[in-house]
Length: 253
Image (cartoon, rainbow, N blue to C red; front, side):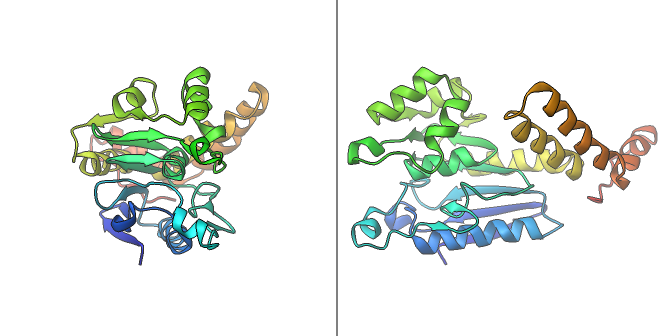
């Protein structure tokens, strides 16, 4: 397996495991990552995912050796590149980044909902240096995540930015010492999983889908999604736990 799946309480830790290739994406990794996300989505006891890379790199992007040999099927039918960049899902995923996240590796990061990075992390879309373009979401998601001119500079020069710069501009949520990204990401996932899971998923949905709508459409979406949450058992549990001064017992329904 090129991807490992580990359960820690309500958190799924998904590890890209091709360290000898800097976790570069080949066909098998794409299939395995899609399968891991399927597993996260299907398991009602898991509420948050974390994606990390084995070894000193998060992910170097597409496996250019596979591309050069003609084995360039690096996407899946439902997930797109690496089995994730176009994958529809409901549960939040956090990228835990150590070392370089470049090209398709950065596009995997941009497909996640939150990012925790070690101080040694680097982010970039260097495709133009090889007569390629960041065609797996980088040219779409990056200018939504950082100022347009910075995204343009990264795309046209192919030069990476440091973890500190990425944190300053909001790509990285939490910046930690090198080697601490995974533990910090799991801690962040635990913070999220302490909350009502249906409300978390609904909030994520409105933020993502609402960003592409006008105000009237976005408010309508929010009302529709909220109505489902308000009919849940967890909606009754939240106020009850507050009144009884105890921790809520979320059921996810």
